[in-house]
Image 1: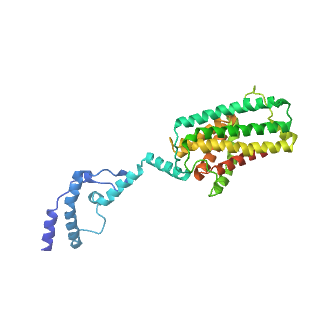
Image 2: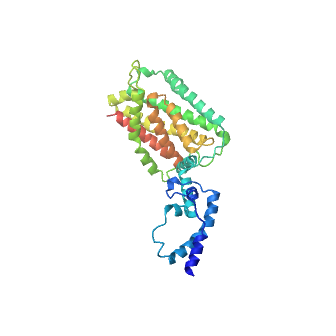
Image 3: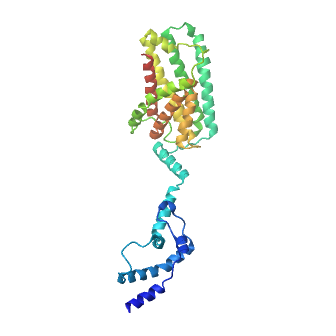
Length: 350
């Protein structure tokens, strides 16, 4: 009775043609997966009950069915649907949205640098301040201070090393004061300013950022050499010795002290107020913080009127901009700027 039942079950079991098996086959290798068609799913759902019954019968027919693995052409199509779905999910992971990845990276950088400032003025005010500063810088250094010295009976060409150092100190202090007055005058109608504008504070954890910024100084020096190799001085350019170098060669301590004040105190103070204190936060109204850091660094480099040093100045501006954006404090960027200028000054004294 058992034999007849088994025979009847095997006879009524639908025969799977080789062509149908080939069409329904799903390779087990992940790289060769193909989408499953509707006809295959229908066939799979119909064939599973017969496979279950066939497995039970084979338990009694020990003489005809061995424990060996069935032939691949009959079982390769019996891939669980969950496995197929996981394979398709893996293929979707490979095809990632690179645009989204870049946006995520930009968000991480933005969170590390800081958020935007609250800017109450428009681009017209930004342009007005910068243009007035350029005009005042040129007028003060080239006309106003020399004219005042001439009225007082002094000629710069006839000054000693100490006189040259004093002239540079007076010029730099006057340029800085005029620039600060321009900023105060143009922003007077927007007072009171938000609390994170032009802040000076000893509080915070900015000391580590300044220390990390100092570690960038050798790289800035390397960039200076690379920039000079890209844009060397023209053969027709006359090689001149600056008044600072003349004082260093003369070893005049008073003149060297005044030049040290110029490069390490005065210049970092008013340059940081303009480029990091005003320009960088103002640009965040129209662009992300990291873009404002980069743009303000390019403007900072161009303001030095020295093509042979533009790359290191851009990089140095980025470092100081990041330190300022993270701390919202002008004191760290001023200190870093002062340390760099002092490093250059000491290098000239060798």
